Image (cartoon, rainbow, N blue to C red; front, side, top):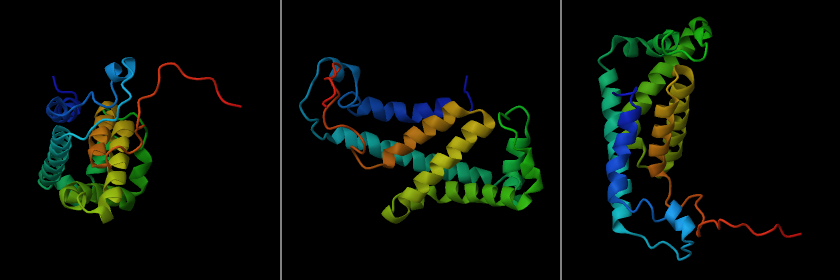
Length: 182
């Protein structure tokens, strides 16, 4: 059973995670055994990250290309169709019916973002904007359409484009904390 793309989003990360050293940095065994030695860079980690990045580019390109065959995407009404559908709706966004220009802009902006993602994500000048759009789009999907698992999985996958080690401690946290210093 496929749950609205969540299985696909998680599946796209499983093979690269199996190839790479997924437990070398943030894992229970590293925490429990208190391995304090720094993690040496590994080629398999680079290959795993690159596979996730390439897979995301393929997914977004073909997702955007597939939308080009839908009339509602050309008309700019696809977003309205999604938020007005009572089967998906978790937030009442029917007020968008009174703002057709906003709905059209959001629909066409999403289409442009998906279609151009593979080209714009590789440039340092546009990467932050593309990643910010990814977070907004997938949070929007999660909140407005009740597909939070899918949205969060795609946000996590997009983290493959963040610089290595961003926000990670150089050493794992100790399970026993020391008392605060005064």
